Length: 111
Image (tube, rainbow, N blue to C red; front, side):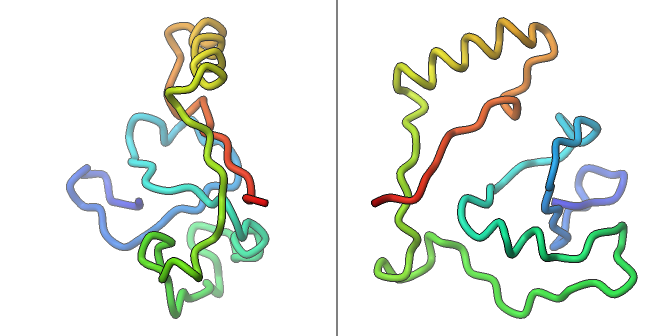
């Protein structure tokens, strides 16, 4: 979520990150992840700010959708053995530079 220099100034500005940006780590809060519809995010104009920015006319959070309209996804269990192995490997590889942002909870469309 975007803000000014003061950490208490967050508002409705949202960053859709298309690639890692380590300069934001430990300074901004990650509060969501696009797991479906990345083509839509990639179509949004880029820039800080873009010359002719897109406007979000309607936004809905998946949890607020009626059950029949929600995307069907399988989400990796972060308590599971596979995730815990990847967590340990990533911690070893990154050492003191490790951040939980270095590790993705895998998702995929449910059959």
